[in-house]
Each structure stands twice: as structure tokens, then as C-alpha cells.
Length: 295
Image (cartoon, rainbow, N blue to C red; front, side):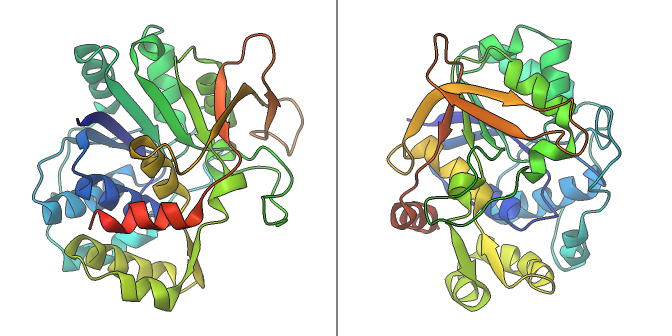
């Protein structure tokens, strides 16, 4: 049984987006209906996604989305990994201004069947939900790599107060967390920060063609970082293997009023009408097995 999926991504900044897309393209149970990109240089991000799709031998619709946050200044104006594109075949032109209509039409064409996976700032998704209030109700589920819900992870490592995707467009984050999605899941820094890999072990695992392209992008990442954290791939793998992370029901709130804390997420377990599910635990061995076995 395949899962119909739409991916909204800021591929081209942190390397984990490319790892996530590579996983989805290799995952035989994934029917990837389309890709939308978000934040600065959305067109270059679309080209990176195109290069991965070409390597996978798949023609996936790709649409550059919204670059500017709803109200806040842009924090992510560039897609640095686009520097590797000249070495790989990819499309260079994409439909403009059609990302949100594409998401809307695709979800409406498959009511109750589509999983929307958001692994970037939530501007596209917030505008989608604002334009068509029925869309959240028509999704099978919404899965987000977003937020941080406790001060430390299970290893006792202190976490920042705000997570990158949430703080890049805090008003969009608030809109998305208010949406009445039937299954509304978040994987935050609480669990993703447990999934790291040093550069050399990562290079040794990148033998498959799709991962060779990711490695080329990762070499740009490694110029400024010593490790990779598998934030976005964790969100993707839980869609196909629910044993990786247990989810707990509760309610997420997004801070908008306090200056310097915009986009901070908090979570209250259970409650009278819990509307969200978050992961606070992860099985790292199970994750890495699930992730790499698809290649």
C-alpha cells in the first residue's frame, strides 16, 4: 500500500532536506504527488529538488513557493547548496506563482488521502490553509518537522527555545497550528537532535546514486559544520514506520506577543480537546535502519 504525499521544503540550506527527499524518492511505499519550495531563492531550491528527481528517474511536479515570511523579515535569503547544481542534470524553469494552487488542487483531488509533509518554514502551508479553510479537513494528516517542546532532549542536551522552521515565519506557524487537521503531528528538536552523524561515517554510507548527489551537497554543508542532524528524514520515516517514534496527544501553542520569543512553541499534554500529536522519544537504531535500507 502506497501513501500519497506532498512535500513542502526549504531544500538547499540545511542538508537534511535533501536527505529527506532522497528517502521519499527511494521509498517504494511513497507516492510523491509533488514538491513545493519555500523561503529565499525558491527557484534554486526547486532546481535542487529537480536534480534528485532526475537521478531517481521520476517526473515529479515541482513548484517554487513563497519566499517572504508573512510579516517578519526574511532570515534565510539564500540556498547555498545550489552551488553544486552545475555538476548535475536538472530542470531550470518551473511554473511561477502556482505552488499554493497546486497544493490546493491536489489535496482536493484526493480528499482524505494526502499526507502533507512540511520540513521548512510554514509560509506556503499557512497561506494554503488561509485561502481555503476546508483544506485542513481534507488532509489525511499533516506531519511537520517543527518546534521544540521541552528544555532538554532525552540525553540531557539543552535545546534552544525556538526551532528554525517555527521562528522563520512565526505568524505562519501560528496559523498552521490552529488548523483543524485530523492528524496533526510534530517532530521537534526534542527528538531530532538525537540523530546525528559525523562527516566521515556519513560519507561512507553514501554509496547509492541518490546519496552521491546528497553527498555533493553535504560537502558544502561540511565546510561550516562537523555533523549532520537528521531532522527532516525523521519526520519522513515516521510516516512509513510508526515504531520509530511514539506520539503523545496534547495542544501546541505558538508565541507571538513577546519580542524575541516569536515562534516559540509550547505543549500541554492531553487536556479536554487535544488537537496535536508530538514525539518526545525516538529509537535511533530503528530510524537509521529504516532510513538507509530504502537505498
